[in-house]
Length: 68
Image (tube, rainbow, N blue to C red; front, side, top):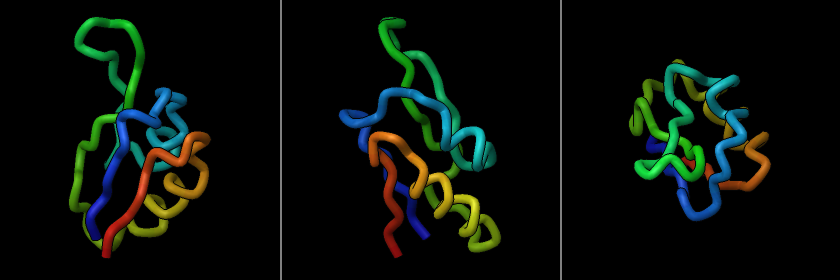
């Protein structure tokens, strides 16, 4: 499983981090102007699939996706 994050869509709501903190972390931008998601694991183990799918499903801006 490969996880992708579209930083143009992400607004740093943190739903993903709340759901799967092993995979996602919300951080400030380099200039401190806005928060955004950072992938802790871009290729997480299948054991985390359920959490990752839930994070993708509940992302308010649809900034996350999974590739097979």
